[in-house]
Length: 157
Image (cartoon, rainbow, N blue to C red; front, side, top):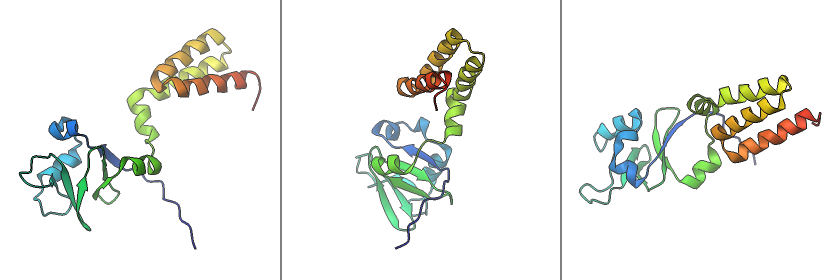
């Protein structure tokens, strides 16, 4: 049997929660556009059962109607198609696009500060830069950065 690996493509996704269903201010433009389509149109997003009041939504795909459960991700595929994805499958299949995270969080600047301080061989300044990086990335990743810096300074691989 042949094995295949998914190609590295960047997709857009939006996690649907009860709160986000009730207030669509955070919805991306492509999801708002799909909401405006007629119920039977390909790519339409609409209340699952008109007038049911349960709040769930469905997506009209080539394969038919697909229910979007709470916490499911709605994915905008590479061909412009929409489809739901369960959170567990999403987490195993996708990772955040680092270019987006860098733009949003200031990660590039924080990493640059750490590298510049390390090359200046200024431990107090490096420690301050690592603390800033910790605030941007979070405690677990920053701890890994400190360990990397310790090994780098000690000449370890």
